[in-house]
Image 1 (spheres, helix red, strand yellow):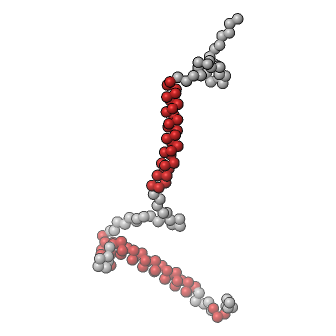
Image 2 (cartoon, rainbow, N blue to C red):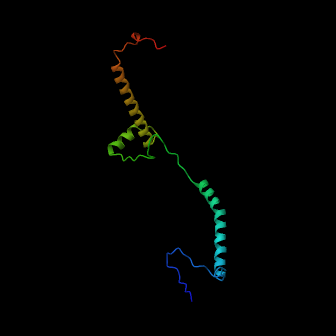
Length: 134
């Protein structure tokens, strides 16, 4: 009786037993195995160094967590804006400085308006009628 072995079907999990001559690696597979071992060894040495270099060269910019202020604000003055900027600029003062000064004046005007409104709202309040806080 003769037994016939067939190759396993593709995707089949059963494996045919290798013959003793099949278990010996040929020279090409030895070279591939040696090259793979060298690559793995090099990667284990290079990867930590590369990560350290990336960490050392990473540039982080501080970000504001409370406001989202733009780095610059674009402003294209009209002819009237240019006339006003020239008229109110002190000697040697740039347009940016004039605009900053104007913004601060506007902020102060708004603060004074709010303070005046509070003053009018509290005009009838008599603190001498209140019990002492201490």
